[in-house]
View 1 (cartoon, rainbow over the protein chains, first blue to last red):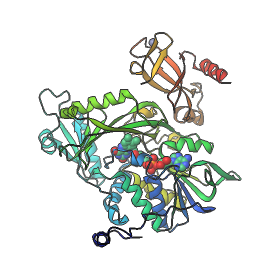
View 2: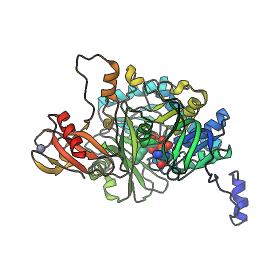
View 3: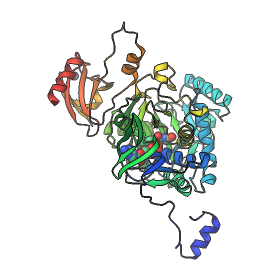
View 4: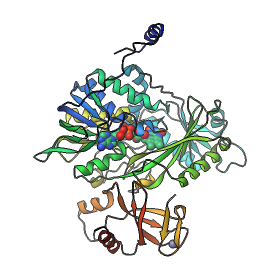
Length: 418
Length: 98
Ligand SMILES: Cc1cc2nc3c(=O)[nH]c(=O)nc-3n(C[C@H](O)[C@H](O)[C@H](O)COP(=O)(O)OP(=O)(O)OC[C@H]3O[C@@H](n4cnc5c(N)ncnc54)[C@H](O)[C@@H]3O)c2cc1C
Ligand SMILES: [Zn+2]
Protein backbone atom coordinates (compact mmCIF):
# COMPACT_ATOMS: atom_id res chain seq x y z
CA UNK A 1 0.00 0.00 0.00
CA UNK A 2 1.25 3.47 -0.87
CA UNK A 3 2.26 5.69 2.02
CA UNK A 4 0.78 9.12 1.31
CA UNK A 5 3.28 11.99 1.35
CA UNK A 6 4.29 15.01 -0.69
CA UNK A 7 7.11 12.90 -2.10
CA UNK A 8 4.72 10.11 -3.17
CA UNK A 9 2.45 12.71 -4.76
CA UNK A 10 5.25 14.15 -6.88
CA UNK A 11 6.62 10.74 -7.84
CA UNK A 12 3.23 9.39 -8.91
CA UNK A 13 2.43 12.62 -10.74
CA UNK A 14 5.63 12.22 -12.77
CA UNK A 15 4.52 8.69 -13.56
CA UNK A 16 1.20 9.97 -14.94
CA UNK A 17 -0.58 9.10 -11.70
CA UNK A 18 -0.61 5.44 -12.58
CA UNK A 19 0.30 2.90 -9.97
CA UNK A 20 -1.67 4.26 -7.00
CA UNK A 21 -2.74 1.17 -5.11
CA UNK A 22 -6.22 0.63 -3.66
CA UNK A 23 -6.70 2.22 -0.25
CA UNK A 24 -8.19 -1.02 1.10
CA UNK A 25 -8.87 -4.54 -0.19
CA UNK A 26 -12.37 -5.56 -1.18
CA UNK A 27 -12.31 -8.64 1.08
CA UNK A 28 -14.37 -11.81 0.73
CA UNK A 29 -15.95 -13.06 3.95
CA UNK A 30 -14.07 -15.85 5.74
CA UNK A 31 -15.83 -18.57 7.74
CA UNK A 32 -15.07 -16.95 11.06
CA UNK A 33 -13.29 -14.17 12.95
CA UNK A 34 -12.42 -13.24 16.51
CA UNK A 35 -14.58 -10.15 16.23
CA UNK A 36 -17.25 -9.17 13.71
CA UNK A 37 -18.32 -5.53 13.65
CA UNK A 38 -21.69 -4.83 12.04
CA UNK A 39 -21.81 -1.41 10.33
CA UNK A 40 -19.12 0.25 8.22
CA UNK A 41 -19.53 3.83 9.39
CA UNK A 42 -16.95 5.89 11.24
CA UNK A 43 -17.71 4.11 14.51
CA UNK A 44 -17.46 0.55 13.19
CA UNK A 45 -14.31 1.22 11.18
CA UNK A 46 -12.65 3.10 14.06
CA UNK A 47 -13.46 0.17 16.34
CA UNK A 48 -11.78 -2.26 13.94
CA UNK A 49 -8.76 0.02 13.62
CA UNK A 50 -8.25 0.39 17.38
CA UNK A 51 -8.90 -3.33 17.99
CA UNK A 52 -5.93 -4.02 15.75
CA UNK A 53 -3.74 -1.09 16.71
CA UNK A 54 -4.30 -0.89 20.48
CA UNK A 55 -5.14 -4.49 21.32
CA UNK A 56 -3.43 -6.56 18.63
CA UNK A 57 -6.72 -8.22 17.62
CA UNK A 58 -6.50 -8.49 13.85
CA UNK A 59 -8.90 -11.34 13.05
CA UNK A 60 -11.67 -8.80 12.55
CA UNK A 61 -14.30 -8.19 9.88
CA UNK A 62 -16.42 -5.09 9.35
CA UNK A 63 -19.70 -5.96 7.61
CA UNK A 64 -21.50 -3.16 5.78
CA UNK A 65 -24.82 -3.64 4.02
CA UNK A 66 -24.21 -0.81 1.54
CA UNK A 67 -20.88 0.92 1.02
CA UNK A 68 -18.69 2.21 3.85
CA UNK A 69 -19.47 5.74 4.96
CA UNK A 70 -22.83 5.63 3.17
CA UNK A 71 -24.78 5.95 6.42
CA UNK A 72 -24.78 8.92 8.77
CA UNK A 73 -21.01 9.24 8.50
CA UNK A 74 -21.54 10.53 4.96
CA UNK A 75 -24.72 12.46 5.79
CA UNK A 76 -23.88 14.73 8.69
CA UNK A 77 -23.00 18.40 9.05
CA UNK A 78 -19.53 17.42 10.36
CA UNK A 79 -19.40 19.60 13.45
CA UNK A 80 -16.71 18.46 15.87
CA UNK A 81 -16.67 19.91 19.42
CA UNK A 82 -16.40 18.92 23.07
CA UNK A 83 -18.61 21.44 24.88
CA UNK A 84 -20.37 18.97 27.16
CA UNK A 85 -21.24 19.52 30.80
CA UNK A 86 -22.19 16.28 32.50
CA UNK A 87 -19.65 13.95 34.12
CA UNK A 88 -19.37 10.95 31.85
CA UNK A 89 -19.76 13.07 28.71
CA UNK A 90 -17.13 15.80 29.28
CA UNK A 91 -14.00 13.67 29.30
CA UNK A 92 -15.26 11.25 26.67
CA UNK A 93 -15.87 14.00 24.10
CA UNK A 94 -12.61 15.71 24.99
CA UNK A 95 -10.78 12.42 24.37
CA UNK A 96 -12.53 12.30 21.02
CA UNK A 97 -11.43 15.81 20.08
CA UNK A 98 -7.84 14.94 21.02
CA UNK A 99 -7.99 11.85 18.81
CA UNK A 100 -9.30 14.07 16.00
CA UNK A 101 -6.35 16.39 16.46
CA UNK A 102 -3.85 13.63 15.83
CA UNK A 103 -5.94 11.60 13.38
CA UNK A 104 -4.52 12.77 10.05
CA UNK A 105 -1.00 11.87 11.17
CA UNK A 106 -2.00 8.69 12.91
CA UNK A 107 -3.90 7.42 9.86
CA UNK A 108 -1.63 8.98 7.21
CA UNK A 109 -4.86 10.24 5.69
CA UNK A 110 -5.96 13.86 5.58
CA UNK A 111 -9.30 14.12 7.37
CA UNK A 112 -9.26 17.89 6.80
CA UNK A 113 -10.00 18.80 10.39
CA UNK A 114 -10.49 22.55 10.45
CA UNK A 115 -10.50 23.89 14.01
CA UNK A 116 -12.20 27.11 13.05
CA UNK A 117 -14.02 27.47 16.37
CA UNK A 118 -17.67 27.37 17.28
CA UNK A 119 -19.89 30.19 18.51
CA UNK A 120 -22.80 29.08 20.68
CA UNK A 121 -24.91 32.21 20.58
CA UNK A 122 -26.75 33.63 23.58
CA UNK A 123 -29.78 35.85 23.08
CA UNK A 124 -30.63 36.81 26.65
CA UNK A 125 -28.78 37.55 29.89
CA UNK A 126 -30.14 34.30 31.32
CA UNK A 127 -28.60 32.37 28.45
CA UNK A 128 -25.29 34.14 29.11
CA UNK A 129 -25.43 32.92 32.72
CA UNK A 130 -26.07 29.37 31.55
CA UNK A 131 -23.21 29.67 29.05
CA UNK A 132 -20.87 30.96 31.75
CA UNK A 133 -21.71 27.96 33.89
CA UNK A 134 -21.16 25.55 31.01
CA UNK A 135 -17.89 27.28 30.11
CA UNK A 136 -16.65 27.07 33.70
CA UNK A 137 -17.47 23.37 33.92
CA UNK A 138 -15.66 22.76 30.64
CA UNK A 139 -12.57 24.62 31.83
CA UNK A 140 -12.54 22.71 35.10
CA UNK A 141 -12.42 19.56 32.96
CA UNK A 142 -9.45 20.88 30.98
CA UNK A 143 -11.54 21.79 27.92
CA UNK A 144 -11.12 25.18 26.25
CA UNK A 145 -14.04 27.60 26.51
CA UNK A 146 -14.37 31.36 26.43
CA UNK A 147 -17.29 33.68 27.07
CA UNK A 148 -17.55 36.38 24.40
CA UNK A 149 -19.35 39.71 24.48
CA UNK A 150 -21.61 40.92 21.68
CA UNK A 151 -18.77 42.99 20.22
CA UNK A 152 -16.36 40.06 20.27
CA UNK A 153 -18.95 37.92 18.50
CA UNK A 154 -19.47 40.64 15.90
CA UNK A 155 -15.73 40.66 15.13
CA UNK A 156 -15.73 36.89 14.59
CA UNK A 157 -18.91 36.67 12.52
CA UNK A 158 -20.05 40.03 11.19
CA UNK A 159 -22.71 38.51 8.90
CA UNK A 160 -24.89 37.52 11.85
CA UNK A 161 -27.86 39.79 12.45
CA UNK A 162 -26.58 42.62 14.67
CA UNK A 163 -29.21 45.08 13.44
CA UNK A 164 -31.78 46.79 15.64
CA UNK A 165 -34.54 44.78 13.98
CA UNK A 166 -32.99 41.42 14.88
CA UNK A 167 -35.75 39.13 16.11
CA UNK A 168 -33.28 37.47 18.51
CA UNK A 169 -30.65 40.04 19.50
CA UNK A 170 -27.18 38.59 20.13
CA UNK A 171 -26.03 39.20 23.70
CA UNK A 172 -22.83 37.15 23.51
CA UNK A 173 -21.61 33.63 22.95
CA UNK A 174 -19.74 30.68 24.40
CA UNK A 175 -16.74 30.07 22.16
CA UNK A 176 -14.76 26.87 21.75
CA UNK A 177 -11.70 27.58 19.60
CA UNK A 178 -10.75 23.91 19.16
CA UNK A 179 -14.17 23.02 17.71
CA UNK A 180 -14.61 22.92 13.95
CA UNK A 181 -15.52 20.75 11.01
CA UNK A 182 -13.90 17.82 9.19
CA UNK A 183 -14.26 15.89 5.94
CA UNK A 184 -17.01 13.33 6.58
CA UNK A 185 -16.01 10.61 4.06
CA UNK A 186 -12.35 10.88 4.96
CA UNK A 187 -12.85 9.44 8.41
CA UNK A 188 -14.50 6.32 6.95
CA UNK A 189 -11.83 5.96 4.28
CA UNK A 190 -8.94 6.76 6.62
CA UNK A 191 -10.01 4.28 9.29
CA UNK A 192 -10.82 1.66 6.62
CA UNK A 193 -7.35 2.03 5.12
CA UNK A 194 -5.72 1.94 8.56
CA UNK A 195 -7.68 -1.15 9.63
CA UNK A 196 -7.04 -2.91 6.32
CA UNK A 197 -3.32 -2.33 6.75
CA UNK A 198 -3.52 -4.32 10.00
CA UNK A 199 -5.32 -7.18 8.21
CA UNK A 200 -8.94 -6.33 9.01
CA UNK A 201 -11.43 -7.50 6.34
CA UNK A 202 -13.81 -4.80 5.15
CA UNK A 203 -16.77 -6.46 3.50
CA UNK A 204 -19.25 -4.24 1.69
CA UNK A 205 -22.63 -5.27 0.31
CA UNK A 206 -23.11 -7.68 3.20
CA UNK A 207 -26.26 -7.20 5.27
CA UNK A 208 -26.69 -8.85 8.66
CA UNK A 209 -30.11 -10.52 8.82
CA UNK A 210 -29.87 -12.40 12.09
CA UNK A 211 -27.55 -14.03 14.60
CA UNK A 212 -26.01 -17.46 14.96
CA UNK A 213 -26.74 -18.90 18.40
CA UNK A 214 -25.21 -21.61 20.52
CA UNK A 215 -26.56 -22.36 23.99
CA UNK A 216 -28.06 -18.90 24.40
CA UNK A 217 -24.89 -17.19 23.24
CA UNK A 218 -24.33 -15.22 20.04
CA UNK A 219 -21.55 -16.94 18.08
CA UNK A 220 -21.87 -15.25 14.72
CA UNK A 221 -24.13 -13.52 12.24
CA UNK A 222 -26.41 -14.60 9.40
CA UNK A 223 -25.77 -12.39 6.40
CA UNK A 224 -26.82 -12.01 2.78
CA UNK A 225 -23.45 -13.61 1.99
CA UNK A 226 -23.85 -16.57 4.32
CA UNK A 227 -23.20 -17.23 8.00
CA UNK A 228 -20.04 -15.81 9.55
CA UNK A 229 -18.85 -17.10 12.92
CA UNK A 230 -17.38 -14.81 15.55
CA UNK A 231 -16.34 -15.02 19.19
CA UNK A 232 -17.75 -11.55 19.66
CA UNK A 233 -20.20 -9.50 17.61
CA UNK A 234 -20.24 -5.71 17.94
CA UNK A 235 -23.09 -3.57 16.63
CA UNK A 236 -22.22 -0.12 15.26
CA UNK A 237 -25.21 0.46 13.00
CA UNK A 238 -26.37 3.97 14.01
CA UNK A 239 -30.15 4.31 13.41
CA UNK A 240 -30.58 0.55 13.10
CA UNK A 241 -29.45 -0.52 16.58
CA UNK A 242 -33.03 -1.12 17.67
CA UNK A 243 -33.75 -3.12 14.53
CA UNK A 244 -30.73 -5.41 15.02
CA UNK A 245 -31.22 -5.69 18.76
CA UNK A 246 -34.73 -6.93 18.08
CA UNK A 247 -33.29 -9.76 15.98
CA UNK A 248 -31.50 -10.75 19.19
CA UNK A 249 -34.67 -10.36 21.25
CA UNK A 250 -33.57 -7.18 23.06
CA UNK A 251 -35.68 -4.10 23.73
CA UNK A 252 -33.63 -0.93 24.00
CA UNK A 253 -34.12 2.58 25.40
CA UNK A 254 -33.93 3.87 21.82
CA UNK A 255 -36.27 5.31 19.20
CA UNK A 256 -35.31 5.85 15.58
CA UNK A 257 -35.81 9.35 14.21
CA UNK A 258 -34.69 11.28 11.17
CA UNK A 259 -32.60 14.41 10.86
CA UNK A 260 -32.18 16.53 7.74
CA UNK A 261 -29.32 18.64 6.47
CA UNK A 262 -29.03 21.28 3.75
CA UNK A 263 -26.33 22.79 1.56
CA UNK A 264 -26.68 26.00 -0.45
CA UNK A 265 -25.04 27.06 -3.69
CA UNK A 266 -21.40 28.08 -3.14
CA UNK A 267 -20.59 31.71 -2.35
CA UNK A 268 -17.41 33.61 -1.48
CA UNK A 269 -16.17 33.21 2.10
CA UNK A 270 -18.70 34.83 4.44
CA UNK A 271 -18.42 32.74 7.60
CA UNK A 272 -15.21 31.21 8.95
CA UNK A 273 -16.53 29.70 12.19
CA UNK A 274 -19.28 27.27 13.11
CA UNK A 275 -22.35 29.04 14.48
CA UNK A 276 -25.08 27.57 16.67
CA UNK A 277 -28.17 29.66 17.07
CA UNK A 278 -29.31 30.01 20.69
CA UNK A 279 -32.99 30.79 20.15
CA UNK A 280 -33.81 27.62 18.23
CA UNK A 281 -31.96 24.45 17.35
CA UNK A 282 -29.99 25.52 14.25
CA UNK A 283 -26.32 25.35 13.23
CA UNK A 284 -24.41 26.49 10.17
CA UNK A 285 -20.90 26.51 8.73
CA UNK A 286 -19.41 27.24 5.32
CA UNK A 287 -17.73 24.30 3.64
CA UNK A 288 -14.51 24.40 1.64
CA UNK A 289 -16.43 24.69 -1.64
CA UNK A 290 -18.30 27.75 -0.34
CA UNK A 291 -21.68 26.14 0.31
CA UNK A 292 -23.48 26.95 3.53
CA UNK A 293 -24.12 23.68 5.37
CA UNK A 294 -27.07 23.85 7.75
CA UNK A 295 -29.12 21.67 10.01
CA UNK A 296 -31.72 21.99 12.71
CA UNK A 297 -34.15 19.80 14.65
CA UNK A 298 -35.36 16.26 14.12
CA UNK A 299 -38.49 15.89 12.02
CA UNK A 300 -40.10 14.93 15.29
CA UNK A 301 -41.81 11.60 14.70
CA UNK A 302 -40.33 8.08 14.69
CA UNK A 303 -39.02 7.18 11.26
CA UNK A 304 -36.75 4.73 9.46
CA UNK A 305 -37.45 6.47 6.11
CA UNK A 306 -34.19 8.08 5.07
CA UNK A 307 -35.91 11.20 3.72
CA UNK A 308 -37.06 14.44 5.28
CA UNK A 309 -40.40 16.17 5.37
CA UNK A 310 -41.50 19.71 4.45
CA UNK A 311 -42.40 21.34 7.80
CA UNK A 312 -38.84 20.96 9.03
CA UNK A 313 -37.47 22.49 5.83
CA UNK A 314 -39.59 25.57 6.45
CA UNK A 315 -38.49 25.72 10.09
CA UNK A 316 -34.80 25.42 9.19
CA UNK A 317 -35.03 28.18 6.62
CA UNK A 318 -36.82 30.44 9.10
CA UNK A 319 -34.04 29.83 11.63
CA UNK A 320 -31.40 30.51 9.00
CA UNK A 321 -32.99 33.78 7.99
CA UNK A 322 -33.46 34.89 11.59
CA UNK A 323 -29.77 34.67 12.38
CA UNK A 324 -28.12 35.35 8.98
CA UNK A 325 -30.63 37.36 6.91
CA UNK A 326 -28.59 37.18 3.70
CA UNK A 327 -29.05 33.41 3.59
CA UNK A 328 -32.55 34.07 2.29
CA UNK A 329 -30.94 35.07 -1.04
CA UNK A 330 -29.19 31.72 -1.51
CA UNK A 331 -30.61 28.65 -3.19
CA UNK A 332 -30.53 25.33 -1.36
CA UNK A 333 -28.99 22.93 -3.86
CA UNK A 334 -28.84 19.74 -1.82
CA UNK A 335 -30.94 18.36 0.98
CA UNK A 336 -30.84 14.91 2.53
CA UNK A 337 -31.47 13.06 5.75
CA UNK A 338 -30.28 10.22 7.91
CA UNK A 339 -31.94 7.99 10.49
CA UNK A 340 -30.51 7.81 13.95
CA UNK A 341 -30.86 6.22 17.33
CA UNK A 342 -32.33 8.67 19.81
CA UNK A 343 -31.84 7.45 23.36
CA UNK A 344 -34.06 8.26 26.30
CA UNK A 345 -31.47 10.65 27.78
CA UNK A 346 -29.71 11.86 24.62
CA UNK A 347 -26.44 10.10 25.52
CA UNK A 348 -24.89 7.07 23.86
CA UNK A 349 -24.55 3.40 24.76
CA UNK A 350 -21.21 1.56 24.57
CA UNK A 351 -21.35 -1.70 26.50
CA UNK A 352 -21.68 -5.43 26.64
CA UNK A 353 -25.29 -6.39 26.02
CA UNK A 354 -27.17 -8.74 28.37
CA UNK A 355 -26.58 -11.47 25.75
CA UNK A 356 -23.20 -13.22 25.83
CA UNK A 357 -21.15 -12.52 22.73
CA UNK A 358 -23.12 -9.40 21.74
CA UNK A 359 -21.83 -5.86 22.27
CA UNK A 360 -23.52 -2.55 21.50
CA UNK A 361 -22.18 0.79 20.32
CA UNK A 362 -25.19 2.96 19.53
CA UNK A 363 -27.56 5.67 20.60
CA UNK A 364 -25.47 8.41 19.01
CA UNK A 365 -28.37 10.76 18.43
CA UNK A 366 -27.30 13.65 16.19
CA UNK A 367 -23.92 14.17 17.79
CA UNK A 368 -22.08 11.02 16.88
CA UNK A 369 -19.76 12.22 14.12
CA UNK A 370 -17.49 14.05 16.56
CA UNK A 371 -17.59 10.97 18.77
CA UNK A 372 -16.43 8.53 16.07
CA UNK A 373 -12.78 8.23 17.20
CA UNK A 374 -13.42 7.95 20.95
CA UNK A 375 -16.37 5.67 20.36
CA UNK A 376 -14.21 3.30 18.32
CA UNK A 377 -11.42 3.58 20.86
CA UNK A 378 -13.71 2.77 23.83
CA UNK A 379 -15.71 0.09 21.98
CA UNK A 380 -12.47 -1.64 20.98
CA UNK A 381 -11.40 -1.59 24.63
CA UNK A 382 -14.76 -2.99 25.75
CA UNK A 383 -14.63 -5.79 23.15
CA UNK A 384 -11.01 -6.67 23.86
CA UNK A 385 -11.10 -6.56 27.66
CA UNK A 386 -14.72 -7.54 28.22
CA UNK A 387 -15.15 -4.49 30.38
CA UNK A 388 -15.56 -0.79 29.70
CA UNK A 389 -12.77 1.76 29.75
CA UNK A 390 -13.19 4.43 32.42
CA UNK A 391 -14.26 6.83 29.65
CA UNK A 392 -17.31 4.80 28.60
CA UNK A 393 -18.09 3.28 31.99
CA UNK A 394 -21.27 5.35 32.30
CA UNK A 395 -22.60 4.61 28.80
CA UNK A 396 -24.37 1.47 29.99
CA UNK A 397 -27.80 0.09 29.16
CA UNK A 398 -28.79 -0.35 32.79
CA UNK A 399 -28.29 3.32 33.70
CA UNK A 400 -31.99 3.91 32.98
CA UNK A 401 -33.07 1.26 35.43
CA UNK A 402 -30.63 2.51 38.06
CA UNK A 403 -31.60 6.16 37.63
CA UNK A 404 -28.22 7.36 36.31
CA UNK A 405 -29.35 8.98 33.06
CA UNK A 406 -26.91 11.34 31.34
CA UNK A 407 -29.42 13.95 30.24
CA UNK A 408 -27.48 17.07 29.09
CA UNK A 409 -30.67 18.86 28.13
CA UNK A 410 -32.86 17.67 30.99
CA UNK A 411 -35.62 16.57 28.61
CA UNK A 412 -36.53 13.23 30.16
CA UNK A 413 -37.59 10.20 28.11
CA UNK A 414 -38.92 12.14 25.11
CA UNK A 415 -36.19 11.21 22.63
CA UNK A 416 -37.48 13.38 19.79
CA UNK A 417 -36.90 16.45 21.98
CA UNK A 418 -33.24 15.86 22.90
CA UNK B 1 -46.07 16.48 4.80
CA UNK B 2 -48.23 14.07 6.76
CA UNK B 3 -51.98 14.49 6.43
CA UNK B 4 -53.73 13.28 9.55
CA UNK B 5 -57.45 12.60 9.53
CA UNK B 6 -58.74 13.82 12.88
CA UNK B 7 -61.87 11.84 13.75
CA UNK B 8 -63.44 15.11 14.93
CA UNK B 9 -62.23 17.67 12.35
CA UNK B 10 -61.35 15.73 9.21
CA UNK B 11 -58.11 15.62 7.21
CA UNK B 12 -55.57 18.25 8.25
CA UNK B 13 -51.88 19.11 7.77
CA UNK B 14 -49.39 17.67 10.21
CA UNK B 15 -48.36 21.18 11.33
CA UNK B 16 -51.66 21.47 13.23
CA UNK B 17 -50.66 18.51 15.39
CA UNK B 18 -48.12 17.92 18.15
CA UNK B 19 -46.40 14.55 18.41
CA UNK B 20 -47.00 12.64 21.63
CA UNK B 21 -44.74 9.63 21.10
CA UNK B 22 -45.03 5.88 21.46
CA UNK B 23 -48.50 4.71 22.49
CA UNK B 24 -47.66 1.04 22.83
CA UNK B 25 -46.37 0.89 26.36
CA UNK B 26 -48.90 0.99 29.16
CA UNK B 27 -47.84 2.27 32.57
CA UNK B 28 -48.17 -0.10 35.54
CA UNK B 29 -50.67 0.61 38.27
CA UNK B 30 -49.49 3.59 40.36
CA UNK B 31 -49.34 1.38 43.44
CA UNK B 32 -47.01 -1.03 41.67
CA UNK B 33 -43.46 -0.42 42.94
CA UNK B 34 -41.71 -2.94 40.69
CA UNK B 35 -38.62 -1.26 39.23
CA UNK B 36 -38.37 -3.51 36.19
CA UNK B 37 -41.95 -2.94 35.09
CA UNK B 38 -41.56 0.82 35.43
CA UNK B 39 -38.19 0.83 33.63
CA UNK B 40 -39.79 -1.12 30.84
CA UNK B 41 -42.77 1.20 30.51
CA UNK B 42 -40.90 4.50 30.84
CA UNK B 43 -37.64 3.81 28.99
CA UNK B 44 -37.86 0.73 26.75
CA UNK B 45 -39.29 0.82 23.23
CA UNK B 46 -40.23 -1.68 20.54
CA UNK B 47 -39.11 0.96 18.01
CA UNK B 48 -40.65 -0.96 15.09
CA UNK B 49 -39.52 -0.64 11.51
CA UNK B 50 -43.09 -0.71 10.19
CA UNK B 51 -46.42 -0.11 11.98
CA UNK B 52 -45.98 2.19 14.97
CA UNK B 53 -48.71 3.10 17.45
CA UNK B 54 -48.35 6.69 18.52
CA UNK B 55 -50.12 9.66 20.09
CA UNK B 56 -50.73 12.97 18.35
CA UNK B 57 -52.58 15.96 19.75
CA UNK B 58 -54.67 18.12 17.42
CA UNK B 59 -53.15 21.16 19.11
CA UNK B 60 -54.23 23.81 16.63
CA UNK B 61 -57.65 22.22 16.11
CA UNK B 62 -59.99 20.48 18.51
CA UNK B 63 -57.13 19.82 21.00
CA UNK B 64 -58.11 16.16 21.30
CA UNK B 65 -55.46 13.48 21.76
CA UNK B 66 -55.43 10.90 18.97
CA UNK B 67 -54.17 7.38 18.63
CA UNK B 68 -52.53 6.88 15.25
CA UNK B 69 -51.04 3.83 13.55
CA UNK B 70 -48.36 4.90 11.08
CA UNK B 71 -45.71 3.03 9.10
CA UNK B 72 -42.25 4.28 10.12
CA UNK B 73 -40.74 3.45 6.72
CA UNK B 74 -43.38 4.72 4.27
CA UNK B 75 -44.95 7.21 6.75
CA UNK B 76 -48.39 5.98 5.59
CA UNK B 77 -51.08 6.53 8.22
CA UNK B 78 -53.11 3.37 8.66
CA UNK B 79 -55.70 4.53 11.18
CA UNK B 80 -56.61 7.40 13.49
CA UNK B 81 -58.81 7.03 16.55
CA UNK B 82 -59.61 9.11 19.64
CA UNK B 83 -57.00 8.29 22.27
CA UNK B 84 -59.43 7.91 25.14
CA UNK B 85 -59.07 4.19 25.28
CA UNK B 86 -55.71 3.26 23.86
CA UNK B 87 -56.03 -0.30 25.05
CA UNK B 88 -59.29 -0.80 23.22
CA UNK B 89 -57.84 1.00 20.20
CA UNK B 90 -54.82 -1.29 20.28
CA UNK B 91 -57.11 -4.29 20.39
CA UNK B 92 -59.07 -2.92 17.43
CA UNK B 93 -55.86 -2.47 15.44
CA UNK B 94 -54.64 -5.98 16.23
CA UNK B 95 -58.08 -7.25 15.21
CA UNK B 96 -57.89 -5.43 11.90
CA UNK B 97 -54.46 -6.78 11.11
CA UNK B 98 -55.44 -10.34 11.90
C1 LIG C 1 -28.29 15.17 8.94
C2 LIG C 1 -27.35 14.78 10.04
C3 LIG C 1 -26.51 15.73 10.61
C4 LIG C 1 -25.63 15.38 11.64
N1 LIG C 1 -24.76 16.32 12.11
C5 LIG C 1 -23.80 15.99 13.01
C6 LIG C 1 -22.82 16.94 13.41
O1 LIG C 1 -22.79 18.09 12.93
N2 LIG C 1 -21.90 16.56 14.33
C7 LIG C 1 -21.89 15.31 14.86
O2 LIG C 1 -21.04 15.05 15.70
N3 LIG C 1 -22.80 14.37 14.49
C8 LIG C 1 -23.76 14.68 13.56
N4 LIG C 1 -24.69 13.74 13.16
C9 LIG C 1 -24.67 12.40 13.76
C10 LIG C 1 -23.61 11.51 13.11
O3 LIG C 1 -23.70 11.58 11.72
C11 LIG C 1 -23.79 10.07 13.54
O4 LIG C 1 -24.04 9.96 14.92
C12 LIG C 1 -22.54 9.25 13.23
O5 LIG C 1 -22.06 9.52 11.94
C13 LIG C 1 -22.87 7.81 13.38
O6 LIG C 1 -21.78 7.04 12.89
P1 LIG C 1 -21.92 5.49 12.78
O7 LIG C 1 -20.64 4.98 12.28
O8 LIG C 1 -22.45 4.98 14.07
O9 LIG C 1 -23.12 5.33 11.77
P2 LIG C 1 -23.26 5.18 10.12
O10 LIG C 1 -22.23 6.00 9.46
O11 LIG C 1 -24.67 5.40 9.85
O12 LIG C 1 -22.82 3.69 10.00
C14 LIG C 1 -23.69 2.61 10.31
C15 LIG C 1 -23.65 1.67 9.15
O13 LIG C 1 -24.33 0.48 9.49
C16 LIG C 1 -24.86 -0.06 8.32
N5 LIG C 1 -25.88 -1.04 8.65
C17 LIG C 1 -27.10 -0.83 9.19
N6 LIG C 1 -27.77 -1.98 9.33
C18 LIG C 1 -26.93 -2.96 8.88
C19 LIG C 1 -27.04 -4.38 8.76
N7 LIG C 1 -28.16 -5.04 9.13
N8 LIG C 1 -25.99 -5.07 8.26
C20 LIG C 1 -24.85 -4.42 7.86
N9 LIG C 1 -24.70 -3.09 7.95
C21 LIG C 1 -25.72 -2.37 8.45
C22 LIG C 1 -25.39 1.16 7.58
O14 LIG C 1 -25.52 0.92 6.19
C23 LIG C 1 -24.33 2.22 7.90
O15 LIG C 1 -23.38 2.40 6.88
C24 LIG C 1 -25.61 14.05 12.14
C25 LIG C 1 -26.45 13.10 11.58
C26 LIG C 1 -27.31 13.44 10.52
C27 LIG C 1 -28.19 12.39 9.92
ZN1 LIG D 1 -59.36 17.72 15.59
